[in-house]
Image 1: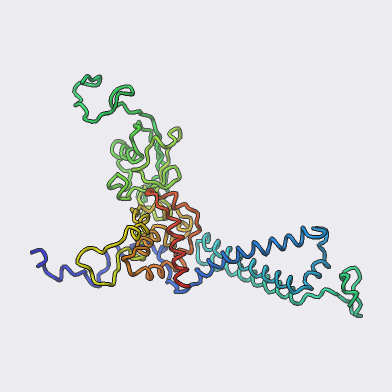
Image 2: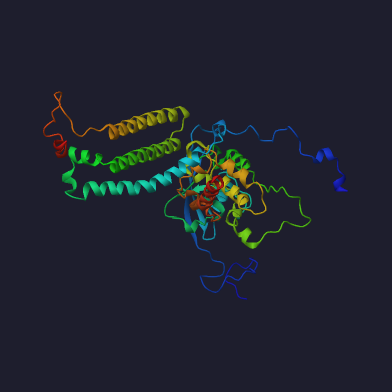
Length: 169
Length: 262
C-alpha cells in the first residue's frame, strides 16, 4: 500500500533550491573551476626538477670547490675556461632554468597559500614572475654571449683580466 | 555481599573488582576549563571563560562541558549528538589540537593547567563552539559522495571481493566531523581548498570497484583548489579521531590523477 502513494510527492522536487542553499559565506565560494592540468604539471615538475637539481648542483659545487685548487681557483678566468666548454654551458643553462622555475613555482605556491586577498596575490605574483623572467633572460644571454677574451678599443687583450688561453689565439 | 557504602544505594551489578579503596571509587580531581566564547548578541569580540570543576577519572571533555552547561552557565553552546564518537558533531580544538570532546578523557590531558577549548578553525563561528559547517559540506557534495554505477542493478547486492573492499576500507571510517579540514593550514588561508575530508570521501568511491564515476571525481579534484594544494603537512592525519591515514589517501588520489592522464 505504501508504494501506491501520490507519485508526484515521491519524485524529487525539480527546480526547488535545497533548504539551506545560498547560505554559504561568499568568501568560501570557489571561483569558476578551470579545466586544465596546469596544477598537476606544476606538481610533477617540482618533483622532477628537484631530483635533477640535486645532481646538477652537487656536481657544480664539487667541480668548483673540491676539484683542483678548490675555492682558490675561482676567478674570471676559471669561469671563462668552464664556459669555453659546451658541456658546462649546457650544464649551467639547465641549472639556471630548472632552479629559477623550481624556485618561482615554490614561491607561487607560497603566495597562493599565504595571501588572503586576490589583489595582494595578483601583485605578489606579478612581481615574482617579472623578476624571474629578468633573471632567466639575463642569465641565458650571459651564458651564450659570454666573451672571455676582452679587448680594448685598439683590439689588444686587456692585461690581468683575460685568461691565459686568450694569448694563444 | 557486604557493603561499605551508603545503605540506600542499590547494589551495582557491575563487578568493579576488589582493589582500590572500595567498590566504585573513582579518582576525582579539580580541573580548570577555559572556553573561548563568542556571542554576537552579547559582544563583538570573542572572550575566554574559565570554570573550575570537580571531575572524575572516567569523565571526558564533553562531560565537563555538560557540567558547565547544565549546572553553571546555560548559555554555553556546543554541538553534540551521540556523545560516543560516531556522529562527528563535537569536533573542537582542545589544548590546541582538533579532537572529539566525547573521545578525549580529561585524565589524559594535563590537568595542572587550564584545558583550553575552542571552536575548530577556518570555518565561520556562529556561537561559542558552533561553526557554520556549510562550506565544509559544500565541498563534500561537490565530490559526489554516492555510488554511481552505469550497469543495471542486479537482483541481489553488488558483489565485491574482500581484496577490492580492503582497497578503500580506511576511508570508509570517516564521520565527517571536520577535524581534518579545520586543522589544515591551506584551508585556513581562504577556505577555497576542497579540504582533506572531501578528498577522503572521494577516495572512498574512486577506489571502490563497484563505482563507475571515479574519473569524474578525479576531474573534480584536479581543480586548482583540489588535491594539488595539499602540502603534506600531516595535520589532517594527526587530527583524525578515526585514525584514517588522510594524507596517504590524498597522495593516492594524486597518483591516480597522474596515472590517469598518462
